[in-house]
Image: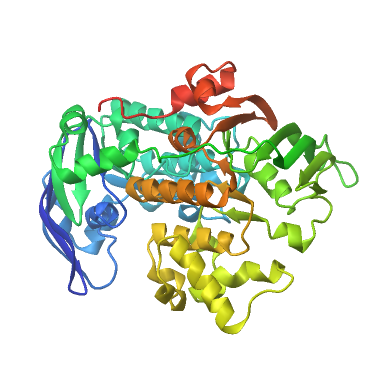
Length: 521
């Protein structure tokens, strides 16, 4: 149905794709895997003719016999949304924040003249119901939905005109494992029901293991290996495929040197948010985002915190960092209460690494300024040459060079930016680092290197890690103990190996069953 032959692409003379060829049959799910920069998304954008200025594409990409690359823009506008559609990685940026979701799903129908407004609204409701959002009104705005729900809205908009080819570009990267499993099941069901073809783009081999019947492995703009999924993952003839498979299952070498004395102690912590407004003067029952949470974190220990989106993980992290007040219980760090105000000298000993380093950096600052930012918490911060030496030391600790301090964030890859974020966290010689989804958006090989780095730093500096993640593979590899959170409560805790091998709570079993794995290897 879709046949791509010798697709090459250059942007302002720089080669991006080199002789890409693949075929996707009707009713088939085809996985395109590889690391960031390998050319996966540019292949999809070439098929959609959504390439940047200066791009030149050659070769053929035929959809039901029509060469997409040869069509003028008017011809492509007639096909986009109707015969081929695309689901993007980040639904919040793909959706219009000032339009209700029903209007956005109906928009494709109206643009293509497939229905009048009344019928388009009805089809939009049906599509939202088909993707599991029938209980949510069509007048809801994107900001009121969870990440998984927003992704479902994007899927509803993409399937409104029953396209022949659906392209899903990293549709589950930022989702928790149960939501990811639901989205993948939904896509598989839509392929079966509508007999369309699905091009599933991902950097995670585990995602395509149970989803795609065929896959192609992409590296530096070329397809280095393709075939049946089970054959590729079992035999992986090409060295790059072997590298990806090895990195996906990588576990860093760690030494458990947890000390008996606790660094951080939580006792029956409660975090409340105001309930929904019910009239001008009244509000409903407050939301207990964190409900009676208690645990300890020790020197040199890695403690995992897992759970579905909305369970309270990040809210709890903000409370630990002193960024949000608590309404009950007690949080103490180094024997001192965190709330209502932790002195700067103690605050410097607790640092954080966020999921998106680019979003947590000021793009106008050089790396030296970014990494040195936490020094203001110190009583006598280094200045002048001593300050630059301090930054250089932190950069070398994360395997970057002192020369990098004169660059800007946009000059680095995602993995390098995450290293810069870790360097910034090390500047004040902390005892606790909170890692909030710090590796979830990274390629598998970059993730493996970052995990090795974290393990090395922990052994050398006796750091205590609170590792928040929806990726159970990562949690299993990097933590000593794990906490499972549901609806603001810790429902199970214990040694990571014991909890994952013999889960007692239904929530833990659900998370483990939903987690994708490279079972074909």
